[in-house]
Image 1 (cartoon, rainbow, N blue to C red):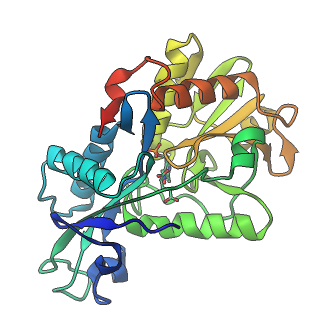
Image 2 (spheres, rainbow, N blue to C red):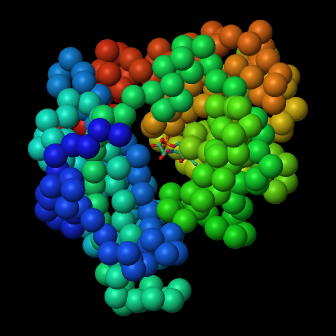
Length: 304
Ligand code: PPE
């Protein structure tokens, strides 16, 4: 990770090294926080942050669901992100807003702990490798189940829930795969450790619903619209592990992962083991849109 110059912390820019938190912060002990992952791209009209307002609105929603006080207007945070990008001279990059409980209270009840809001940005290349974007990645169904709606909130981006993703990701890497695929308690596909899943079978594109334990991904929503507007039949469907073994194409979507083809599931080739035409089209449409080369959804680009 390459440090940048400034991080925005509770309303002001501070030097990267000074953006620190006390070791007794509530969020550190209990995972009481919410975060976002956003990307900014260089476009012909200058740097644009992709669906910035939608990301900040999801942060507000996550905090609301988790009961964390949110002392900002979404617009103020949108401006803060632009300031962070400008002050660091970043033409493109990854933006990480996070809100969490700080010090002032120990024990599970967070009342009395201050709430912080931080926005950092840095350059971040292909999340699952450039090779993965080109030729696809190898994934395996995890022995860890995706956190369920009875115990936590898979569709809120709460920091504590990510221990579930970390366990699944680490086990997958240790076993020699690139990424983990998580089932929910009913054995249906939820999502990857940090990505949503799409599957193509008999010409129809499917993605699991949020009720199956998937995050309401903004890339998922974007790719859904782009493919649908491009004429593809696409729907939210419950997807089983076997569906993936029979699928013609599988791909992941996410801010960090963008559109990453999956070439193997559980040591079985997906289709003929190479990224298929729908996956390629999704990549073209998505990357063309975020980079402002296609003018399909100009409202998604928020210029710095
Ligand atoms: N599911 C999970 C669990 C998830 O973390 C992400 C984003 C997605 C789906 C896709 O959501 P969206 O980015 O709105 O399309 N994961 C973020 C963090 C990854 C990380 O390693 O940290 C991201 O992609 O920025």
